[in-house]
Image (tube, rainbow, N blue to C red; front, side, top):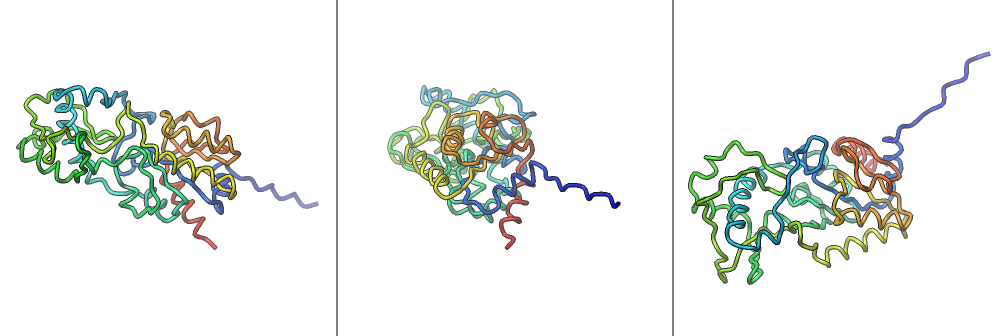
Length: 281
């Protein structure tokens, strides 16, 4: 009597890929997606504890604004040279119904993703808090460099944070320009802690997540700990509607209990495999 063939088994990794293969997708990404581009995340297993500047502190006077810009000027010099990684390129190939990102680095757009909502804005833009004029960050960077010669060279050993900030205590003497249109205070066009995400962005994301329930879709969370409500609310909304949620992230997340599958890993390999699978007839 011949021995029975062993039963085929699958892994959560394979099952998650199978779940997402043919479904309409909304993808929510966080800082963990950009770690393979050399930009550290906020809350990964090896990330140091840090407290970013709040909006209330930024608008409280010229001293905190100087401290912010002195650090951010160094961070931008490093961040704008980062290149999209395999995960960004895979998501551009996947082309989800909507790509919601909590990142401000602009790497999804540079990778070619078409339908992107940058929840927290983009560090590549600067806005005046007075007249709301938006200017390119490259203009601000060139002006800060001219006003503060040698600043970047003297602090070449600092490391960048996910929002383009760096750790630097001594910022006295750093010169910050005012808005050339109205003389108002200039701020990166990103949502600081203590600010609300603009309502139109949230509504567009809700509409896309809601549509998944009517079309057999799924929500994929890639590289986000879902610690802040700006991202967690979409996972909760999908789960309440019965939409499958897949979470791919190093370490635990606030959405683990909502997930059909949780993969404790980086994002590039999984997204590359998913893009290849969805491209296979």
